[in-house]
Image (cartoon, rainbow, N blue to C red; front, side, top):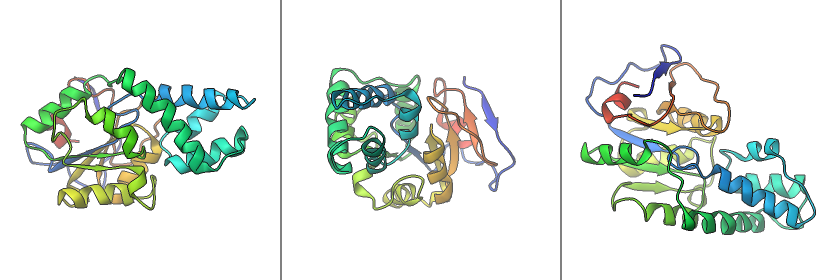
Length: 230
């Protein structure tokens, strides 16, 4: 069982229900560890155009909406393309890698199955685009996610609250009754701004905690009941 570390008393009391009303999950770094795929693709693109790409630069991209990442690459390499063109290049490389192998995070699929069996509605909230999400969803049972919010469906990406507000509305559950699971400060800030209860599972980037957030070491062994107490 992962350790649960509350970061403070928070603005909400722990849920008294057996299960959360709804769970909203980030994708990259949270349920799948695709960040290395993005980093490898970024490096390939930079080197193909005579540039370099460091791990520090790659870390700047984690949790961003893709257009922001595209602009960062364009300006820092630099690249002779628009941000939109760079996003498509990134997606080409990452989708190819995902089709070869989906790198699930420990406990992620098991938690999704448990939430489904408990009847807890779930939404995927990712800043990746639909064409990247599709091959990952193919590896999950139909109906695992009652709603999917992608970066190409919202006007404002994380850390803006729009992605999480959109997901909660799609499920018909107030954001304040939803538990959001995130791995990046950008994503957690988005969920918090929407009013969700925030559970963070740090992965590639440091995760400073805010009052009311809960930290899990891993999703391995995490149950719907544990999320209800987050």
